[in-house]
Image 1 (cartoon, rainbow, N blue to C red):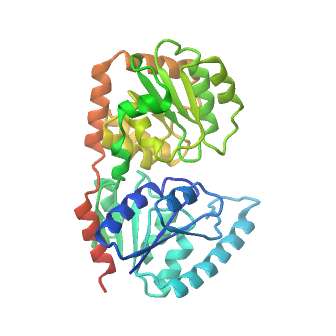
Image 2 (cartoon, one colour):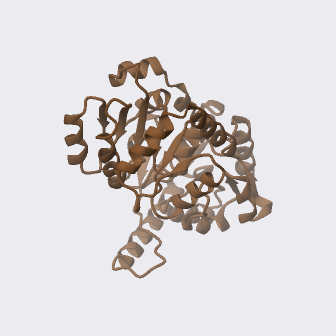
Image 3 (cartoon, one colour):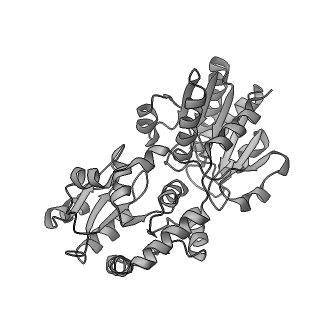
Length: 358
């Protein structure tokens, strides 16, 4: 059996698929796993780290607005479609699974032409264009939120919850203190701008750090593809501020030791925070992340910081207030865990069986 995953460009569509991969590898140890992703995205390192073969395809954005890159994207999409046809013919996978990403669209259309069944998972509060385009060709659509069940054809839609890798839950606080060189007597804030990093989050965090001396320690995942001048300058001045450009297995320990997590509003990260019941301050990227975070804030599950109207001083003030209020931190973590149900192993296997059954 050959199982083909697709998605990339960011880690948004990657993290739930890695969780599905872990479940299926345990259930079907003899299966072969392949991953189709983008040439320059952050997914390649994570995918190859778990022993999955990685195949880069040409990818272009499906633009719904006028852009000078429109024709370049059309060419890239066309090349990606031809590559997808060849890949489906050569590998003849038993199933294609995606959680979004433009690189997945030509592949899933090609799979449909070859009669290969596909499974599309919807995470975000707003349904993205990539998933919208893949829905007609999918045998099953699963959703992270129950409310999404009404957004897709009833006959092939299943409310699954969002998958999460068990590895993320295996962090150790004592190990984290040693690993990151932390002071066990001070609270810890873990700040991350998502899989590719965020220049704006980096700006806000470095501005906030100067107001947090003696209040907490900060672990900052700045992103290897982002300018590092700001964070490196701040790191030289503050011993309690620890900067890292990229995490693999360190992520679980950063989560475990954190009293508060400051993050973007990607659904993959939010799912991980919900699983651990972490008090979270979210700085959504304009677009679908704003909808994700607004939905959770309305459920009193997270705190929003607007990247356009806020500065580092406001972020520091928000962090200080939340650190001083243990009851609120606990309430936020519990509510986020309640609002964001996780996909169970049994349900993932059940959906998989329904898709591959011919």
